[in-house]
Length: 97
Image 1 (spheres, rainbow, N blue to C red):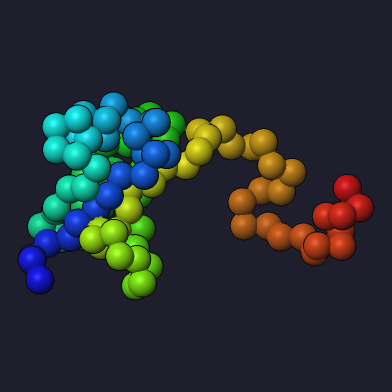
Image 2 (image 1 turned 180 degrees about the horizontal axis):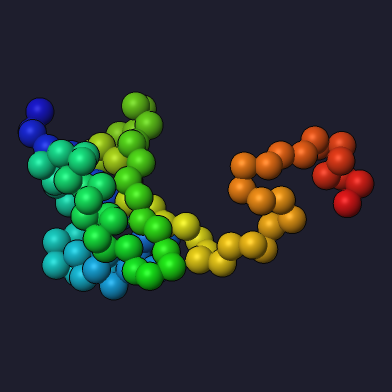
């Protein structure tokens, strides 16, 4: 098994970051980093203003060859939810809305 941490860029990351697009053009969808920590720093540095890129471990049964995936939030908009982040309501209450 090779050393390092292999990250595959997901479409959400490609759509929001020019740095991710450049990486894919140069070397394909997967990239090997020295460690997951290094991959996380790269993701933070590649995050454009108002967006968040992050690295998530691949599922243990994932056979893609990636150790993790580079993902992005689908929207930079916040405050468009009725509840603030972290607050929860019951399913029955949600159905009444």
